[in-house]
Amino acid sequence: LRAANLQALQSLGLSDASMDAPGTHPDFGPVTLRQLLATWVAHDLTHIGQIARVMARRYRDAVGPWRAFLPMLG
Image (cartoon, rainbow, N blue to C red; front, side):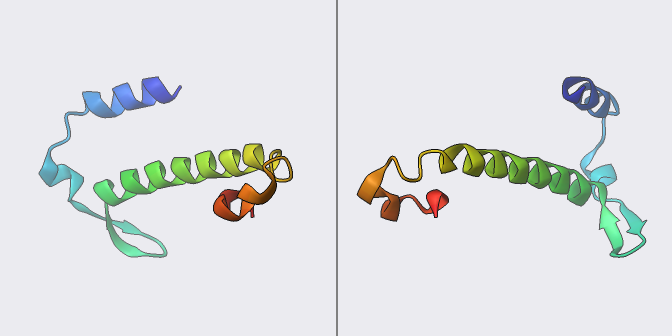
């Protein structure tokens, strides 16, 4: 689904001008498509970070004293 969505977005042939054209968000006011797409990327990266933290937590006690150097383990 992600690949199909990216292909659909690319097929629009958006220019820099269209990426920077203003739209209106009900809460934020003026926004651009460039900002919206960047937000989607940041949102996905946030989920990747969450997944990594959950996976790393398994090793929290196993790493012993090195935990102090691994902020993700808390």
